[in-house]
Image 1: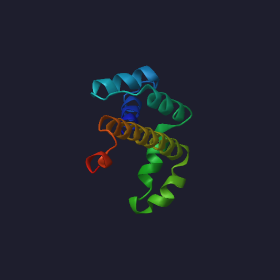
Image 2 (image 1 turned 45 degrees about the horizontal axis):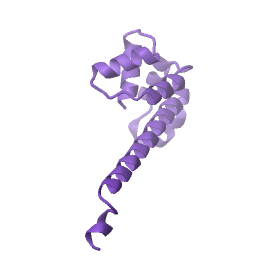
Image 3 (image 1 turned 45 degrees about the vertical axis):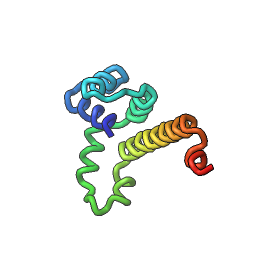
Image 4 (image 1 turned 120 degrees about the vertical axis):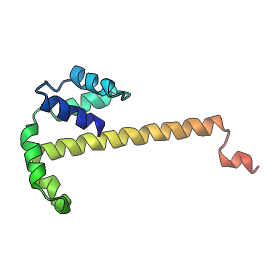
Length: 114
């Protein structure tokens, strides 16, 4: 989410949403920046009118979240795609961490019980 917030900050301040600016905002916030996530978000927001998307999102009631994605248009799709990519990357990192933990501890719990 911090990547999307950084893009919104850049948009609100009138700055161009590009890789350098997005990385700068994230680093200033103390986020460990992943270049691939920055590139994916910049590409997803390339043809999106953020002001229009924010207005549309504000007009959709929270209770209608299922229909909200369809009503949000391209911005909702771009955000959903970016969030999906972030979730996939996070899962991949967790799997790598689990694999490293298993490698460090022998065969996991099986090693404890013989």
